[in-house]
Image (tube, rainbow, N blue to C red; front, side, top):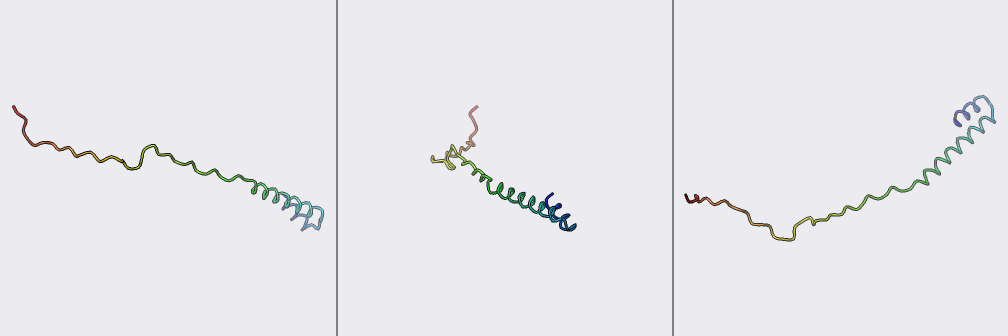
Length: 73
């Protein structure tokens, strides 16, 4: 809105409207910059807790094999 006022005031030789438009635009930009400076940083991602170790500390179990013997009758 302030930029439009400044444009209209500058084209029509209305210096009061031009000054009002520049002032409004300047205040709006300063406020926006101030709000941008006040933003809080994004919180860091939470640390993932693993309850089990990535690798087992015990030895692996032996492989089971099926015996090829025929069962007794």
